[in-house]
Image: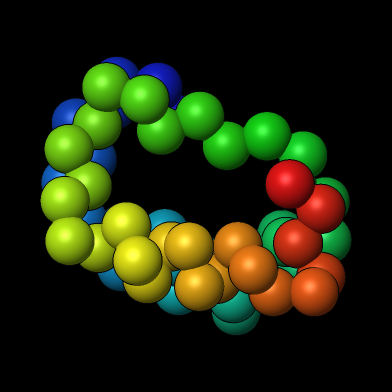
Length: 53
């Protein structure tokens, strides 16, 4: 998702938590996106014990 113009990760984090994606996701490149304050929400999701990042 490099340089995709993402400004809010709410829908991304919701998708990650509502599917089994965290079990299979090995890399998530969000560079060149301006996610701002929503980054803490993403950090919390990625700290999930099922996350393999």
